[in-house]
Length: 608
Ligand code: ASP
Image 1 (cartoon, rainbow, N blue to C red):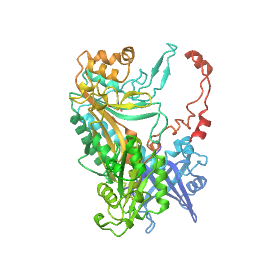
Image 2: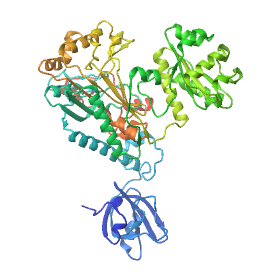
Image 3: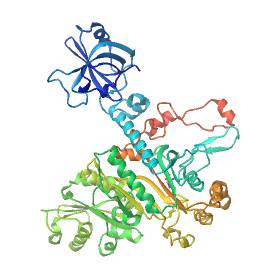
Image 4: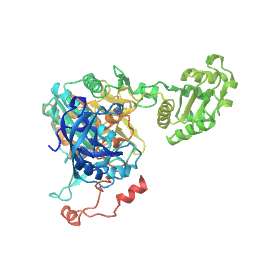
């Protein structure tokens, strides 16, 4: 090795030892004749001092050092002179008095600072990702990610799970996204599809008798870019035989509890995890991924609409929609401008508008409220009694502001849950170390796709209906509840799972509701259906995302910050310049012709 110890591992216990260090020049300072270098490796930073009197040659070499040069240093560990210790870094009590120095490699001036966490344009960071990953926060995330995955592997190994790799070149395994296709050279005109998840493969492994399977699996989904999506993401893919829903949930609760306590002990994890049904979650939080670190629960006000003179409320209910709202504590003092911001926010999330009702005055009982305390664009359409009723239902007190959205149920819920999260953030209701994990259960099996006029699987096609609901598959698909569950962390969907169908006839009925023809079923899912006829055990599982978990554990809202080499939001890799054109000869070999060409570079700058 070119070093005897890591910079970051040095401490007072090494005082007096002769060491060889190798790493990057993190910082350089001259103090009179002395040169100080902060030398960095993965473990941390150590101070090295070069004295022209005791080590003239090393001092001269150090004089040439520039930021991010790779250097090797010989020296002796010494306590820092009294008063110069740095309690902010782990190696702050010692320094290395250099006796020798070698330049291993020089560096151009990096495009951004490694030694500070300054804002850097993300495209530049991704283009020079190998430099970006040197920065402390990115290095720490890589380390944390390694520890998370290692913990998962060890935990599951102790519980008899087998890690099995499944192929990347396969046939379409749908999870509701578009497939990435790989053309076959040997069979021109035919394609592999990259797995959207190993779903069918893990089910086949259950038929194989593996009983307990997991994999840290890469999933490929060609989706339109969205904030926390990537063309490829990593899941903890898991499947078990002979289990019921609670067995899977209990296993994950244990895994995540122990994981968080071991890997991020500073987190305050709410225990036990909340479990709530989809219906309850939608009712209380207007979303199936509620952030449970704060209250501000929803109240349904639809039934009040006909009694009011307010057209906005009436119109929504008359056209089959809803009126819902919640109360933001202490926000009666919001200025006109702040309210306008919220209205714009609600509109940007799909609401037609936002009605606010501020209850002004000293904190007091809502029952004593008078109309001159009520500030709202809707005030003249509401009686005092109606305002009091709205306040009671939303749990508002004097001093609070009620936020109400009226419209179609779907868009109203989307806007209200976004507003609730926005108010949670504005009111600083969350502590970065609070962690709330919850299971949302009892999802509907299907949801109606208005655009295409057909039923879609709410989770995926392999999810089994809950006992007692099978009989409604054909007659009333919308009422069928699934044995399906989501894990939600601080308002982020971490993953989904279900107890699966393991019976051919039932699976075929579900495919039929989803609109697949018999030929399509045979062509796409024939392998699974056949397997079901050879002793398929009851089974179920789940596949929470690793990237999303890391985001929650590191309080990041950019998924790219927890992946070593991510794509941009427009699915471009600026480091390699992928996607990119290929040689004509490669296309010829594949017997492919390209019609119309997009340039990712220009699309990037246009779309970013
Ligand atoms: N395959 C599913 C997904 O990727 C998860 C599961 O049902 O296990 O979302």
